[in-house]
Image (cartoon, rainbow, N blue to C red; front, top):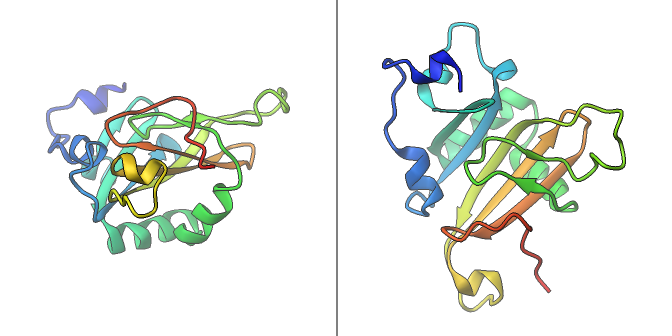
Length: 164
């Protein structure tokens, strides 16, 4: 954690904890590395500091717009493409482990950004969705790989849940 993260001027309003607990299902979370943050720290002051960057929790529509603006990608298209590859995204949404790291050992593997949202429990769908609210998290690695990880909120498992 950086010195800035411990700075008393950085708000700690609990939005991330609420989001991770499934209490903010209308919001989205966006993790950005320090390299994506502006020099003045305005974005950092709007989110919660994690080891390698900041996680912002914002209302859904605003969050999708912010993600598109900050990354140049449509968030739902990004999510759709990332679903094709399972990987590990950390439970605080502050990065992940690229599934291509072993196959591409010469490349740098660092999650540059994460987009996440929760989906309310839906017993009719069955599977994971019948167990509880589901976290959907999508990451982009510095090597170019996009990957996803989902889990029942409050029951994080490093192995991504596989529907089948």
